[in-house]
Amino acid sequence: AQSVTQPDIHITVSEGASLELRCNYSYGATPYLFWYVQSPGQGLQLLLKYFSGDTLVQGIKGFEAEFKRSQSSFNLRKPSVHWSDAAEYFCAVANYGQNFVFGPGTRLSVLP
Amino acid sequence: NAGVTQTPKFQVLKTGQSMTLQCAQDMNHEYMSWYRQDPGMGLRLIHYSVGAGITDQGEVPNGYNVSRSTTEDFPLRLLSAAPSQTSVYFCASSSSGLVEKLFFGSGTQLSVL
Image (cartoon, rainbow over all chains, first blue to last red; front, side, top):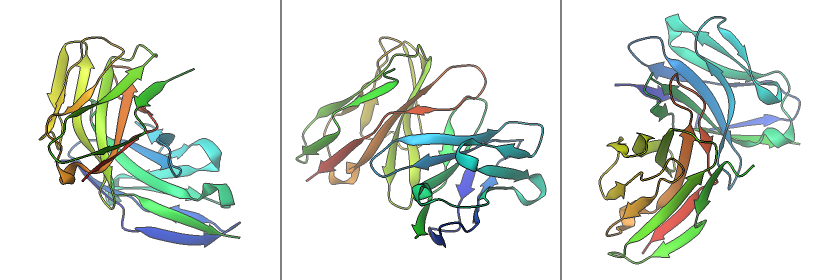
């Protein structure tokens, strides 16, 4: 069965600092991987996705993620965090049938 | 562009009451799904549909019913609400075929007393 773990429940960074959110997955084949962001009281918005090809993918809002098959990881990064990035971030894996499995989420707080 | 519309945004029920959460999308998406979000557990799939007349169970289907009579609408029914169903519910849709991104509604916050 597919599963997704996000080891960090809550991360606090200072504005302008770099950010890395960790995601590990368990899946038998090459997964489809996603990062979503959820602002308070809102639905989820897609940041980026990986299907195949280049293992470093670029997303919206200056985010990027790197797929590492050997580590079963898909970590999200941003070189310089803005206060508006404070939100909850979800990593997800999906199979061809489009049913997603989401991780528990990482809440990001940004200090001024 | 409306996208995915969920109603109501908030609902309080008493144990044993029934209700229907509405979900509608205007993007002609074949795939629609319902998730519940609970603290520390991410989103869990309740039911999904790959087209009108076709539904199937997800990870946590017990206590919920769905139907898909049209492409646009995918209501979620709670037949006899229980406190364990207190959660935030999200409807999502996407185009069929290869895995595509999900478009999410803004959610329904449900409390069962």
